[in-house]
Length: 394
Image 1 (spheres, rainbow, N blue to C red):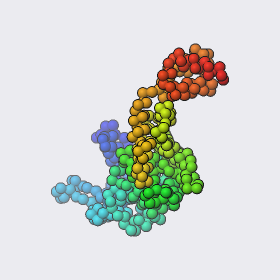
Image 2: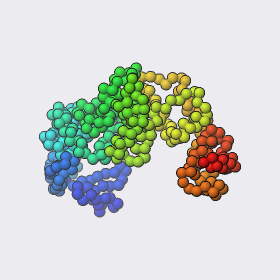
Image 3: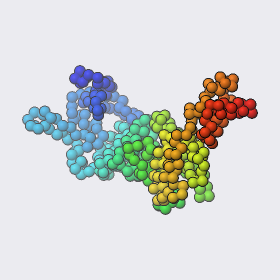
Image 4: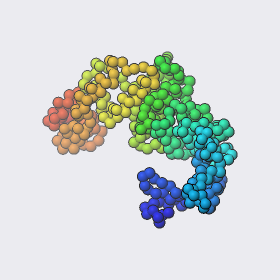
C-alpha cells in the first residue's frame, strides 16, 4: 500500500497505512488482538489472513460487515456479515459483537462510541449490550483524557445529536459521574427559571441552543454554570462564574483540550454573567470591549442568547444585546489595547529614562486608562506628558 500511494504513512504496531487525502483514509491489515490488561489497548496484536477473524474483534455488529468486490463466482461481489450487522441496521439496533461484556472490556471507549452511534443513527441499544455498558462504565475512568476529549467533541460537533439526549444516556449508564463529575454535580441544584428542571437540565438546554458547527462554544455552554454546585446561598449563586471558571480550567487540563480552545471556554465561563445597563458611559463600553476582547464578543453574546433561551426568558428591551452591539460598533475603532497607544515602552524608556519592570508597566496601564476614558488623549505629546506626571507621583 505504501508503494501504491506515495506520501502515505505507516503505523507498524497496528499494520495501518494512512492515505493523506481528503478525507483521510486508513487501510489496515487483517489482525487479531489479545489481552486488554488496562481496558484501553491490546497487549498483543497478531496479523493474519482471516477476514472473519478480523471482523470478530470489532466492537458492534454494524461495524463488523465487509464487502468483497471480487469474490469468485459472486458476480457483483459478496457481502460478509457473520454477526448479523445487516439485520441490526434494518432493526435500528446497536449490538456488541459476541459477548458484550468481553467486547466492552477490551476497550472502555466502546461504551462511549456505542452511545454516539445510537444517537447519531437514532438506533436503540440492545438490552444485553446496554447492561454491559452500565457495568463497564466505571472502567472508563482509565481512559486517557485525550480519548475522552475526542469522543466528547465528536458528540458536540454532530448536528444530528442533541446534547441533552447524549448526556441523558451518559447519566443513565453511569458515565457522567465517572467522566464529568463537575457537570454531574449540578443534578439536583435548584433553578428558579420559567422552564422546569435543575442546573444540569439548564446547562444541557444551553448547549442544545448553540450550533454544532462550533463544538468549543457548545462546550462552553455545557460548562457555563459549573460553579452553581457549590455557591448556592439564600437563593443566589454569588460568584459562580469565578468558581465555574476554575472548575472549567481544571477540566480542560484533564481533557487536554489545547491552549486556545481551553482559554476560550474558561474565558466565556468567567465572563458570562456580565450585566449591561443603558446608563453605561461610552468609556464603560470601551472597558467592556477591552475586558472581553473583540474576538470573543460574538461568542459571549451567543452564549447569553442560549442561556436565556434555556431559561425560558427573553432579553428585556432595556439592557438588551442588540443595544449593546450597536454601542460596541460605535466604539470599535477606539484604541483599547496597549498596542494601539501612541507611545510604547521603548518611548517611555527613551524619553523619560524609565527602566524596564513593574513601574514601567504601571505607567502604561495609567496611559491606557486615560485613553479609555477619552480616546482623544491618544496623542504622543499628551501621553508623554501624562507619563511624566505619573512617574513623578510614584
